[in-house]
Image 1 (cartoon, rainbow, N blue to C red):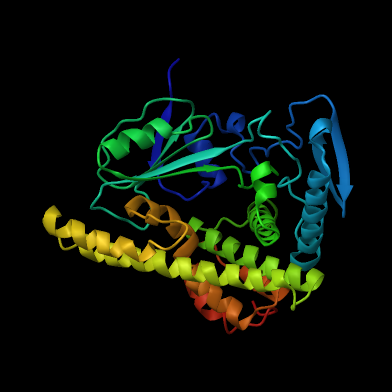
Image 2 (cartoon, rainbow, N blue to C red):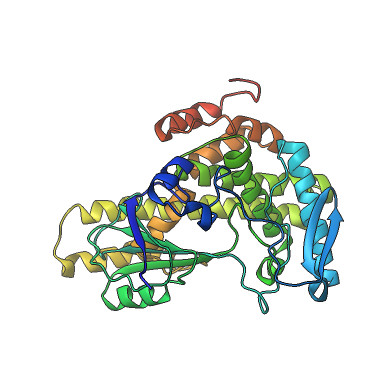
Length: 364
């Protein structure tokens, strides 16, 4: 069958609804996540013996044969985190993390993405997105960084092709995205502190986009969600386990880790951008590039390259500004009340964040 690809100017992790509808006439069938287009149904389990489990005001779904004690304990934790989100941030109920899918029997909804960049080109964001409606071989020459994404093509062949042709690539397969993030064995394997942070992170996305109607630039939205995921975890753990608990220390360390990751990625971008602007011969440029990239060698996300830096920037570029607001407003409820006022326009949002560290929670 004819395969479809749509090229369009990069507009962030998930494009605004109106743009999507204008560009993708089949958006309603794709369930891309805008409230006006429709959100994934809960549950989407492929079994006849679905079980409903209520925990702390949230209904969870699972197949009977998969409803183990561990799954029920996870439902209880997620239910408590969602209750905390409603009480602390004013969250509405979301479709996120409401069902358990055993990935040995059913594949969860997955967003596949691959960032591709020439070995001597970097940018703050991809010059274009390419959406693959179904599996196809994308082999176009890439002169500026791009992102290819799909709900149906795992993009492994694109990764192999562009690696073989000496491009930098960074591929992701994401099941933790809003709306519709799912509890899976991978989620259950996360530490308690990570589980709490991820639920807060994705429910923040859902409420910002679907409930409160914000339409932030992706760099602003992801940095805010990263902060609120961490701040929500710190606040929840302090309230439920105490400031003297090992989990509280872990949650604080997780936040500091993201501060450090942001510094590495943001500095790497600046150094690489400056290097490439000099237009040096490749034999001179390559060792200088490797020297910059080696700064990340001891980290869990190593090795890095142009594409991976571009893929991380939405989460890191503005994070130092958001973290500065947290430093002066460490209370999760107060921080959330301030950050939800962030303007949609990126330049206005940056200016707001610079002022926000001095704001009170009730200040407009």
